Length: 365
Ligand SMILES: Nc1ncnc2c1ncn2[C@@H]1O[C@H](COP(=O)(O)OP(=O)(O)O)[C@@H](O)[C@H]1O
Ligand SMILES: [Mg+2]
Image (cartoon, rainbow, N blue to C red):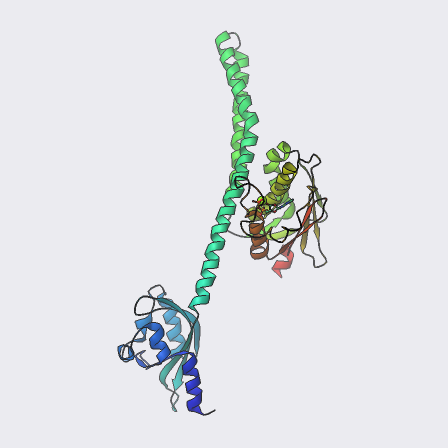
């Protein structure tokens, strides 16, 4: 291959430009003109910052110039702007060309357009964020149901107590009883406000990831879900074979388990089953990851849908009951946020979910 052929090959397949040491454009190939929507005449003699995108922070250009002025090659993905306002992402390599005395003579920039793949990645990210919020709302809805359940009893109690206070007040002789009822009311109110505090913690998206004990997360979740666990007569049995910590957002992790329990509950109810046993085993696999086995006895998941249960919006429930986002989000949380894995297995007795997550000890290495 001759040098000319080589040059030709690069120019045919890339976006190529040259500038002098001050950044003034001295050359632009056809691809450059086409993608940035300028004619060659409009480019030659202009500063290369003509294609700058206003979003790009000054520091980026400082890094670029620092690099190339110290005679090193710069590589990066740069956001650019075309003449008519099109945003373009280009993988850019800027190479300083030195003369025989070792001084920079000019810069050559070779780019290729990666706008489409960046846009696609951005769209996927946006969609994920949207789904995440939706599923969080669904989880919140479930939790509000739990609060309502846990409030029902103390609210009744309060109603009765207030009524008694009125009676004691009117009968005059019962000042002592009146005060006792008053104190009792205060206790009940305190308990109700503690419940809110508990749930607030669950709703708060914790910003930072940290290590937490799997046992603590499960205990907390079961405590919060106590209301619906009782209401639906679920027997949740947890076996801790080992004390393990994992790393992540504790609320995300409990959200995954919350959905598993709610799915079992729905299956029991739909199928009108009386015997409702859920078993959770917290142990370690042979690679020393957390291995959490979740098993119910709600007669399992149909063969023809089991491949779809992790898909977004896949649900077999009425739209007021299911969003189809629970397992999708669960998988996202376990895989993307916690670096783990979730698998399902089912037979005619029930469904089994196996969650594996690297333990904190492993992460710290
Ligand atoms: N333990 C289970 N037993 C039977 N079917 C289940 C179980 N868990 C999940 N499924 C099925 O998987 C579907 C998707 O679950 P999920 O993603 O949590 O969405 P949703 O609960 O909103 O329907 C459910 O609609 C149900 O058909
Ligand atoms: Mg669900």
